[in-house]
Every structure is written in structure tokens, then in C-alpha cells.
Image 1 (spheres, rainbow, N blue to C red):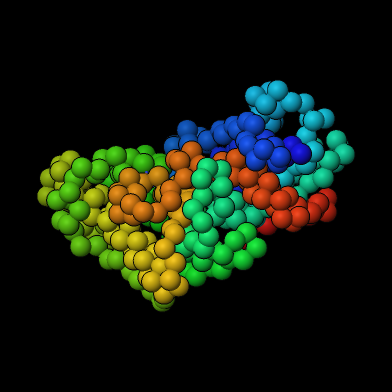
Image 2 (cartoon, rainbow, N blue to C red):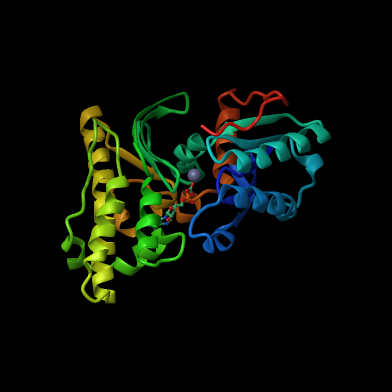
Length: 323
Ligand code: KG4
Ligand code: ZN
């Protein structure tokens, strides 16, 4: 069976096609809205919806072309249905339903966080059980994963997501959106700069996270900068990066100890971070293109659902859900 999958939950318009028999991705296309969002310094939901409207037909045709398939050769269409930006999801789900209905193919709506969570299956996943952290611009959620049918959320952020914290701290210091990758690059070799400022490293409750205090702390510290030199900025950024990453690592380690689980999986855009990778040398990190939003992970989730007999057609009256 060939499954075409659509991802449009945030600011990436993506389409991928998977073959269930061989468990392979036949084609994948990702159009990021980064350029469109730069002038706003962050994601504007309305702009994301409009970008999806413009880019989705292009991504759809390119994915079919790359796989040398026609829509008549597609057996099933899936799309990210939740959670995400409502307008953005609505474009993907409506496109998927309309294409499925017009071609007499079933449609199934899937969960974006599940797609991230099981994205290691795109390559070589470690054996279950996993402690898994989905960490992106929209999410910071810790899970205990037994398998596709059995997983539990242990904790989540009470305010900002870790990626959002990277982006907001970077914006305070004049970096373009998304600031996460730029901070990563700028401070990669700045070992001493990491300890110049002792920013808050909140560890609320058992497994939750909180990053909103960091922004204020960085803002206050930036106002006290003497010259605003590159060195002072790097010290702020490296210390802030450490304050974001240390709680992530601590929570993962606590969960591993408490549940006696040694296999750790990371997913989401922040999982691209080189310092995080350095801090967790034994953890499983998907390759960067599968950390950030993509449709291949939605296609792979569809394959896993199909294998488990869980790929059930959704009703065409189903719609996008923000949470
Ligand atoms: O998963 P993603 O592409 O989109 C969603 O937010 O759903 O993640 C994007 C987020 C942004 O906040 C970006 O700054 C952050 O991931 N990010 C990074 C790195 N690469 C992307 N943060 C820190 N270090 C990186 N190398
Ligand atoms: Zn995501």
C-alpha cells in the first residue's frame, strides 16, 4: 500500500509518500516558512495558514513527481490533525480530505506528537521501552514509551517551549528567527561562557519544565551589559543555552532512574542542538531533517498504524483540532 501524508501543523508545509510493504519513504518534500516569518521575528499563525495554502499544492505535486506516481496510485491519505495552529492544520486536513474524497481513497487524521515520538522508526530505532522528549518551538513533553499502543506523558512545559525560549532569548539579543540554530552555532566552542551567568534552571513538579523566567533574567542581564560586545553577548547566549538544556537532561535522567529505562529518544527541532547531543551521548537522536517538522514522520506513523491494524478511515466530517 502507498500512503501519502501531509504535515501542516506549524510553519512547515510537507508531503511524503510511504510504501507499507517495504517500510520505505518513496519521496518527501518540505517547504519551510522561515523566510516569510523572519520579518515578524516569530510565527504569525495567519501568515502560516496563507503559506500552507500557497505551498501545499506545490509540495503535493512535487512529492508525487519525485516518487513517479500519480494520485490514482495512492491508496490512503493521512494528515496531521492535531495539535498545532488551528488555521494551519485546517489547510492540511481540508486538502487531505478533499483529495481523498475526490479520488475515492480513505483519509485518516493523525497526531503530530505521535509522529515526532515514533520518528526513530524512519531509521534505526532503539529497542522499547524509551524515555522520549519531544522538544521544539511548540512543545516540550516527556514520555515513557512502551510501544505504539502504550505510552504515557510524564511531564510538559508549564509555559514556554524550549525552542520558544531559544528564539525569545535570541530575539532579545538581536538574532533573527529562528534563533535556536544560530545560538547553537555561535556558542558551540564557548566552554567558559556557559558559566558566566547563573540563569534560573526551573525544575517544577516531578517531570515538568518552565522557561518563562529565563527570558526576564536574560533581559535584565542584557540591560547590565557594559559594552554590548560580541563577547558579552556570547556569554549571555551560552549561559542561557545551558539554562535551557540542563533541566531537559535532568528530567530525562530522573525518568530513566525512576522507571529503570536506559533507552532515550529525542525528537523535535531542539533535538538538532549540538550541545544537547553532546550532553546525551548515548541517546537516540534522529537525523536533523527528521527532528524538525516533516511529513516523512507522519508517513512512517501511518505505516506503523497500518501494521498494527490501527489505520482506520476518519470520517470526512472530522476537522482540525488545535490541542
Ligand atoms: O520542530 P520544529 O522545526 O518546529 C516546531 O516548533 O514544531 O522546531 C523549531 C524550533 C525553533 O524554536 C528553533 O529555534 C529550534 O527548534 N531549533 C533549535 C535548533 N534547531 C532548531 N534550537 C536549538 N538548537 C538548534 N540547533
Ligand atoms: Zn513538531
